[in-house]
Every structure is written in C-alpha cells, then in structure tokens.
Length: 142
Image (cartoon, rainbow, N blue to C red):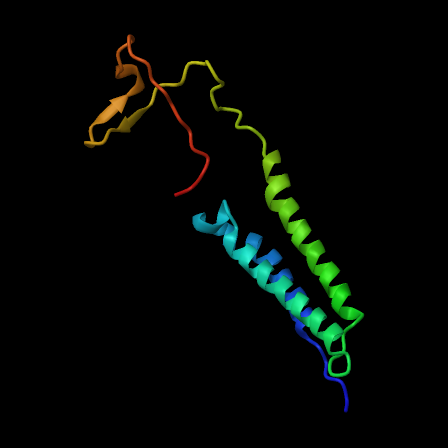
C-alpha cells in the first residue's frame, strides 16, 4: 500500500504565514484588532495545531503517512514565524518614539475646550484656580 502525502504541516505553515502577513496588511487597520491582535493569535494557534497534528500523524502511522522529516521542519519554521510576529507586535511596538508636543509630568497643560456630560463647553482656563484638574490621556482606540 502506498503512503499518502501528509499536507497538514505544510498547511499549518501556510496558515501561520497568512496570520503573519494579514496583521500589517489588513487587521492593523481596525481598532478591535490593532491593539490586541487576537484574530492573528487564533490563526497562529490553528496553524500550529495543524502542524502538530500532521507531524504526530506521520510519526504514529508511518506506514500510512509520509512526513517524518518535513513535519518537524515545517513545525520549526512555523514557530519561527510566530516568534517573529511576537517580536514585531510586543517588543518592537514598545520602541515607538514619544510625542514631541506632549506635556511632561508636572508641566502646565495648554488650554483646551471640551464638552461635558451635558454637552456644554468647558475650558481648562475656566476651571477655578483653587480646584485640581487631573488629565488622563488614553493611548488606544475605541
């Protein structure tokens, strides 16, 4: 009986490659997936699962399936792609430059006007000098 081709490790590697490329080309444009790339993590998990099942299948049933050499090779390549993605999104993203125009801690904030909860404009200069103002700048999108 001829052994069947074991394409699961190759499919897993291709899925990991798609997950890697889809973040900067597609998912980084949406606020729900830009800050936490959860869709890409799911794609990576599925790709690594395919590589793992395909490699295990080649070792558990060698008389039926091929891939005892290429399965681990595709597994290592898939892990390298996941590692590069984690470096890109976690480590490299922390090296973003600070804003040149942002006020420093303790520095006077520039005057601005925003709407309060009732829709009335409130300016920073209009707040009495005897009260404290806490400004919080969120770095995110929603």
